[in-house]
Amino acid sequence: MSVIEITQTVDAKGLSCPLPIVRTAQATKALPSGAVIEVLATDAGSVKDFAAWSKATGNELIEHSVDGGVYRFVIRRK
Amino acid sequence: MTTATMDAPVIAPAVQPVPETAAEVRPKEFLIINYSGDLEKIWASMIMASTSAAMGVRTRVFVTFWGLQAFVKDDRRVTGQNWMQKMLAVMQRPGISHRKLSKMDFFGMGPWMMRKLAAQYHVASPKELLEAAQAMGVEFIPCQMTMDMFGLKPEDMIEGMGEPVGAATVIGLLTEDSVPLFI
Image 1 (tube, one colour):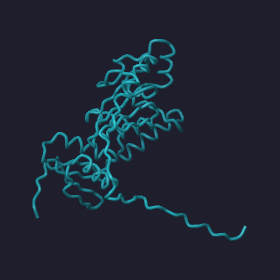
Image 2 (cartoon, rainbow over the protein chains, first blue to last red; image 1 turned 90 degrees about the vertical axis):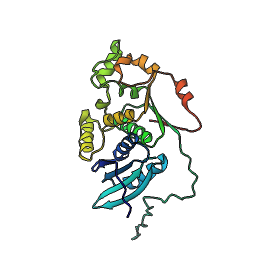
Image 3 (cartoon, each protein chain N blue to C red; image 1 turned 90 degrees about the horizontal axis):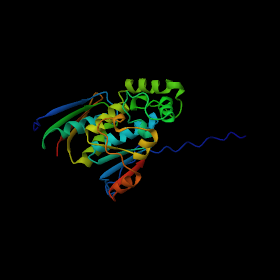
Image 4 (cartoon, rainbow over the protein chains, first blue to last red; image 1 turned 180 degrees about the vertical axis):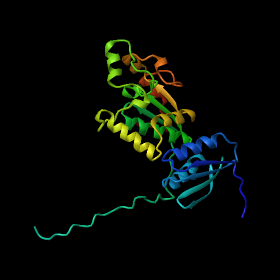
């Protein structure tokens, strides 16, 4: 398994739409290209939202998983 | 009546799969014409504006009529020059944190409950979303005509507002790649 170095973690647990996306977009903007962001969220809508956001902005969704109701998204900044 | 059985309702799946082959037309610009000052509509407007900016779409919000009242600084109590303008501000306190619901306002009881629920479910307030939107570069453009009619001065408005303009300027902002939304 390759190890991906996480530059920053956005804790969006408990936050409702659209804050997980808004907070992630704000964090992403402040980082250099290629930086990797990990997002933790509990909003069930975020699975589709992160896929849509990644597609629209070109920031790559490297992986996503769910563990005990917490969704985890790993994104590489464009 | 006979013992007719009810037809089982046809329930469509909540999420329709998006065909991969569908042609995608992505708007490059999003223009919200924010006419209403009602709490629920300002809220919707701020959700759409902040999300669209987060999606990398250039976003502008033209604030006009009752919508303009929401972008007056929260601490301004009475705005306007003449008694009618002042009375309007007294009847509907300006500022994004003092919005009323269009229905079920019940002298502030409705908005109070909405705020309670929003806090309980960690839904961002319109003010919080406005700040996020501004931080992400959403442009807020006030309507000159409404500024005049309500007797509002640039210093009454929140920080970071654009130059007041007219309808022609706003229509002129529209391109083939933009999506306008009237709220």
